[in-house]
Picture 1: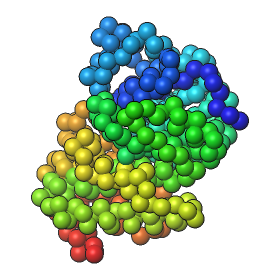
Picture 2: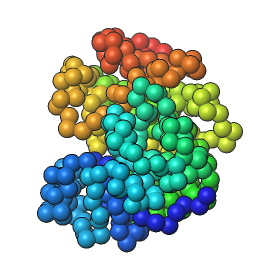
Picture 3: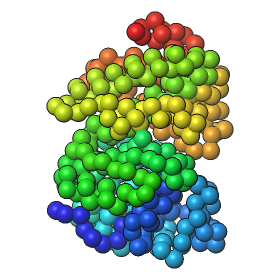
Length: 333
């Protein structure tokens, strides 16, 4: 099935959702936009920008149809772009009564479905009956803050149907965003989760005062660990993990000042508890949840993943970051 040519909807109101809305409004005449809170919608209309995220980005609200009712926005849309944080995904979907099997799904969620430990693409296919060729995923390297500033960014769209991937990529391409396409849907999704875990590791090491030399070694080992997991969990003969959607996304998430996962990790490295770090941060660090999910997923595959295991021990078993990172340093080359 080709992508329907009807209305496109953004499903979520955070910073990444706002960045994607900005991109799409450079190529679409208008969009539908689901934001859960009606008060946020009213403030958005009054101010001309998202009142809570990327407030510097001004929108022509005449080109946006806002919804606080998830069922109504799904009824009125053909392409659904999901950009909700993974911890909140199921609570949003529980409100959904409208069938989505005939919609085209785009997941820009950088996480796994909690408890189920399923990739978003697998979840939409298994529980909502959406054909795999009608599910696509979007990944970086791309921070919302740099999209807001219109700094040159790159996205990869993954879909089993490459023509559908190209159609979505065209909608996300403008003067400051370049896109490429791939059929490696699962690989892109798993790498999007793992890079957040490794960014927390990078932040912890920064908080512990490890320098740039060590950070380079950490990232080198992280991409090897990611590659080994992908080769076992979702083997694909022509996958090249040095492509930007894998290595590039890992690097920007591990190094950038805009990376909330790195910030979260830095706080842990400086001695914050998980709860105190979460309370101080205004946005969700997806890697905290991704760490637990991936640890549980890997119990099935049994890939040797020392970085993942170390971050799990620090975040969930309260093992000292000093001890865990020291053990990592002794194993790295």
